[in-house]
Amino acid sequence: MGSSETIALAAHLHVLLRRKLGRVTDTEWMAQNADYAREVLRVARAEHDADLDQWADRFEAVMFPRELDKGAAQGGKETGAAPKPAAAASYLGRLR
Image (cartoon, rainbow, N blue to C red; front, side, top):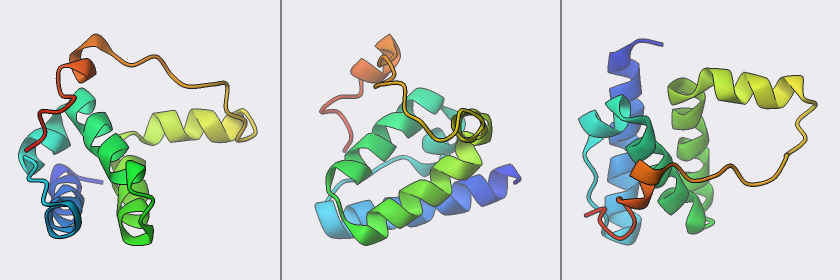
C-alpha cells in the first residue's frame, strides 16, 4: 500500500486511541518511524479492545508486511517476545 493509505490507517488508529484512551499520537510520524509505530501498536493492544485490536492489526499489516510474512512462513509460531529496540524505550510514557 502507498504511504497515503498508511497515514489513513494511522489516522484511524489515532482517532480510536484519542476517543477511547485520551491518547494523542502523531499520525505522520507513526507512518514513517517504525519504533514509534511499534510503541503505538503496543499501547493500543494493551487495552484488549476489539476495535483497537482490529485497527492495530490493519495498520501493522501495512506498516510491517515483511515481519508478518516471516511469522506466517514459520507456521505462525511465536518464538518469544522480540527484544525492544532502544529507541522504542524512549517513547514509553511519552505518547501524548
